[in-house]
Image 1 (tube, chains in turn purple, brown):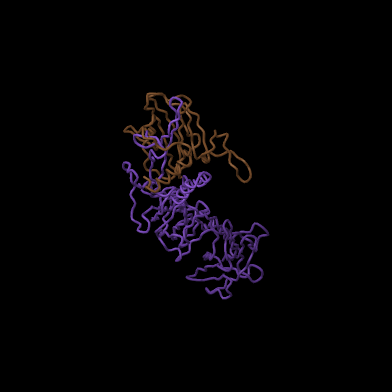
Image 2 (cartoon, rainbow over the protein chains, first blue to last red; image 1 turned 135 degrees about the horizontal axis):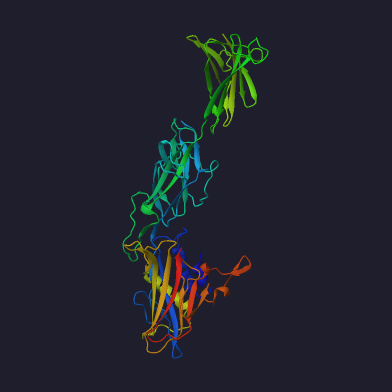
Length: 387
Length: 165
């Protein structure tokens, strides 16, 4: 801003005094502080009958016609209090990916005081059913245990929007405040909505949440009232930039999880009678192939496949690599395991057989199947003999 | 209103800065009644939902609000007034709005320092060793020089807008 000091400094000592006085009265914030009086006075020079007349200075109301540099009076108003919060969602993407059953999932919001005075701030955070990022983005489920917290680092004037990861991060227990007693003009901070994901939603389901921030009286957090009535001359009025001094922003949790498609097929690999076109006749060997395709958007681990064998068949051991019973293929990598009978995975390779009520069940699990990446698949092969 | 001490300093400053060569106040009334008012635009919605913008006395002025300052000079003498020149500084805490100065029948000039006045194309600023055109936001003084005499009973109007910083 232009300094009155520069304006007058070359003219006289009196001018310097005036300039200094105005500088002292200036607010440090970008917006002029409430209560600041703004004065204006005009002057007119003129002649009558070719004779220059004494300057006349202006006045409000009926005006002034008394000549002289000391005449007239300022036309003034006082700056009112502007209550203006800015709130925006600042997560890395438009949605926050979460996994079913995950707790303390965070969305981040950016809050800045765009008003011209210090304010307290209170918040609410709640489930938001309506769409937030365009059509088709209405909530499919409700996040549980929705809470909100204020970043514990003091609000600053450097309000660069953070990016996550790498930006300001929520720390459970450290970021524990739920109100801001005082937020100075032109300073900003971050607010976190923290919620728990239920176990039930499916891949690509979304849950929307909304944070509201309401300006309150500093420290006491008492409610503010806008002065909407008639002019109160030379009084600081409270002006709300937003209805009820409240702003809102939304964010979305997106379920990103594994989603499996299971297919099972069988092939007669030898009937020990024909030279080709083998038939499923007693004594014939059949290979079962179970394909587990992950169509979801997250990798899956701790997978366990259990398959009950038809009672007309007998599990065929040592089918692969001389002494392995099961072949597991993840991507292009084959691994093999031994399916011990008796329900105990004695060698710890992840494969074993259980027999109950005459039905044999093959189980294949970690470490035979460690993980299936998103858009990946696992293929389990084993063989039986037809009784 | 400003306090007594301020008023004294302000008056002293104005004498020294702008009117140092002129005589002190004389007892008789001058020929011109000079009036300054501050107004803001207010949108009014009538019963039919029609919006109209009217000017009201400056109220609810917060940073970013544009204030219209209007100076009227009414000739209350029986003789015409000549060389009518209205001066108005852009108030402290405010920024002049480009192209907002208006005054029918007047030549309008601006000044950055209150001493050298010129049209926008004549005002320059030295910055980093280079000369550039002054920005309207840098204008600190406005001067309206009315080309014709102000006839008895007539009123000259000078107007500009400024935004509260």
